[in-house]
Length: 257
Image (cartoon, rainbow, N blue to C red; front, top):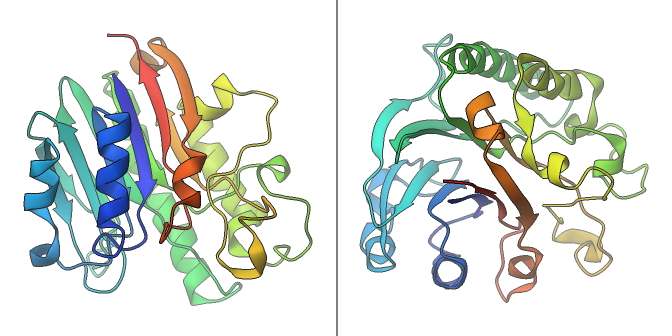
């Protein structure tokens, strides 16, 4: 089984890129983030024509998450996180697919920091950590997949001082990611590539793609039962180089049946 996560950065604008990638790589499960589309704007017919069922939570112009399943229909189990009844941002969706519980997340960016957006980021991650702990305690096959908007370690960003004040690299942000690993979740990409410098995002500005000036923001974290089945992981970097591409590349894992 192949599970992927992809911050599409506008599903209407990147639909052609998405469909081409789906047809070429045929992932079994896909988590999408930053749809930037209302529920009614989600391209369900095009996704179905490519062979995928879908559940989604849209939001006009911003945010939005979706889970796709090849040749099957995901069973929606949750939308949103507990702990803040006033939070209306479309950042979390959960579904059951082929015996796996799939959590798709688009964490807040948090910039500028310090300030209210950074405080929201940390509060959101705290809510996520509480829910993740509950999921892990179930001892079921679970994957947390998405754009966490955290650079876990200094080696996960190109050599630069330009991000020193950015919310993505702050100690508090990295501590939020570490909290999930301390619960027992496995960082699949880092497990398979323990020594490599890995990037999943390249800003459009300042020729960062051309200079390979990237960051690792997109992660797949596996529960204990899925960790035992991990056989591979990678980044489809070529997708970032396509015409009209998202500023993120898809990240994937393969699991033994």
